[in-house]
Amino acid sequence: MPVAIKNTAFYALVVLIVLFAVFPFYYAIITSFKTGSALFTIEYWPTSFSLANYVSVIEAGSFPRNLLNSLIVSGLVVALSLLMAVTAAFALARVRFRGRSLLLLTILSVSMFPQIAVLAGLFEVIRLLGLYNTLWGLIFSYTIFTLPFTVWVLTTFMRDLPIEIEEAAIVDGATPWVIITKVFLPLMWPALVTTGLLAFIAAWNEFLFALTFTSSTETRTVPVIIALLSGASAHEVPWGLIMAASVIVTVPLVVLVLIFQRKIISGLTAGGVKG
Amino acid sequence: MTVIRLNNVRKSFGTFDVIKGVDLEINPCEFMVFVGPSGCGKSTLLRLIAGLEDITSGTLAFDEKVVNSLTPSQRGIAMVFQSYALYPHMTVYDNMAFGLKLAKGGADEIKRRVNEAAEMLQITDYLDRLPKQLSGGQRQRVAIGRAIVRDPKVFLFDEPLSNLDAALRVQTRLEIAKLHAKMHETTMIYVTHDQVEAMTLADRICVLRDGNVEQVGTPMELYEKPQSTFVAGFIGSPKMNFLTEKFADAYKAHTLGVRPEHLEVREKAGTWAGKLIHSENLGSESYLYIDIGAKEPLVVRQDGKPSRQPGDLLHVSPINDNVHRFDQSGYPARA
Ligand SMILES: Nc1ncnc2c1ncn2[C@@H]1O[C@H](COP(=O)(O)OP(=O)(O)OP(=O)(O)O)[C@@H](O)[C@H]1O
Ligand SMILES: [Mg+2]
Image (cartoon, rainbow over all chains, first blue to last red; front, top):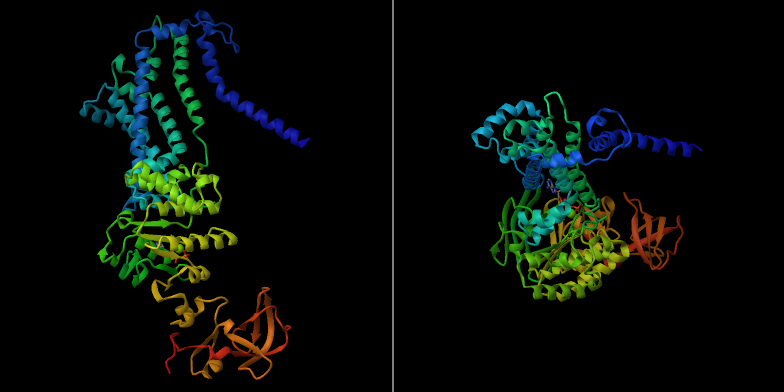
């Protein structure tokens, strides 16, 4: 009997958490299928099914372009920060040099600055580099913010890889680059996928920099465009369009997680060293 | 056919001296075993020879060529690690072929050498498996195979058997002995703290103590003429008995060493006498612990099962006066 109660309580809690987590998204989806005044009635079950909002979002001028911008920016941020983080992590985890822990702490402290604190300074840098109102400006600034986190996580992960495997590779004649790419990377899939996904999500959802460092519609990313969607009059908020756009924007993230969750398997190093 | 020469080799980690000036010559094609207690620097010395650690001072030469600053692969060494250190994401075949691929060997050549090594070690059936699908003994064989395919000039082992169970250890020990016979062009260095492995495998043994070479010699030299109480106590099982004071004075020594197998029990008029306090029966032989009034009980080896009961009074004598005399500092007494 107590077991049954325990189980019931457990699943009740699970349902509660899932409801709490999923409800906003669910509500966005059902809202995105509504049009007209139905938008302003509160209903918890889908009542109407119309794709009108989706059609107008996609056909409304720049949205596909902005979606592509977001993809390019996020994709490049992930690629760049993983490339730099993996090489940095190898140095920080495996090469002994003076000031290593100080450097590691500095990297971590960089990630503690709130975005708004560096906004003005970063704006100047981006202007100076001639990156204002280009996607490169966004890629540059996002990479700055994702790097500390990716470096930190990958360093911790790499430090835990057995040192003998690296030494075996050295004996086999491997250079550091070969060790990183042929020996460590295949063992680091779980860490790479996890940090890569988080970096992607961070870049995908970023708003403040995107708003500040771009000015024309063609260079905007999706979060900014959604925020700037306006209705027929200044006082009308086009909820239907916003919800449809939001749903479209969320889909790539869900797809990415579904693809990569298979890769996030543990025990990849099993069998290499004893035990 | 590589001769290895160490000249006053030192290694410190920060201010901590681990290897304190080792001079050693390892002959071509020799099977050299480093033994010593835990922490004496065996692994460190092996890793210096491998090139996995930098030599702090002194020179290391392979065939008269100083190799201090060469990488392990430039030195032409191969190493078998205690923990196997296989690449977990590669099949057995790829594990063995990895070094050859990096050396840009031809595909046919690589295949031939891997298959040859696999046959030698009887792991041909596992070539497609991942390390995690193998038993400990099979993994260690793969690790040995990975070293063989590189056809090294110098073959290094760091306690390769210590993760295996007792039966497998004996079997793999035999295989390593066979390997040495087959690869008779290769100089091998083997680290262990198991003195049975040292005695059975070695052409010569190097006993290390606290970062220094204590004695180098063939197993029989170390057994018959230990140059210190340390070596005398380290080589041989069970351990040599050490007697001092009046027992040693009679032999004009500070410390008298007698191996348990060099003692015999007599009916009367032995050199020493005492009560049997305990006996261990191993079936084929037994060990008697006799309290003759020394600091520790005297251990005597006997064939077959013990013939006496605890409490019996026994007389014991060294056979043929086979004793080792040491002076105050632990070195052989001259006078
Ligand atoms: N990287 C290192 N940094 C600092 N000290 C080290 C390092 N590697 C080894 N040592 C020290 O050097 C000494 C010798 O170590 P080593 O591993 O050579 O011993 P060993 O003879 O192989 O012992 P065991 O039989 O336990 O393997 C030890 O006291 C150890 O603490
Ligand atoms: Mg060791």
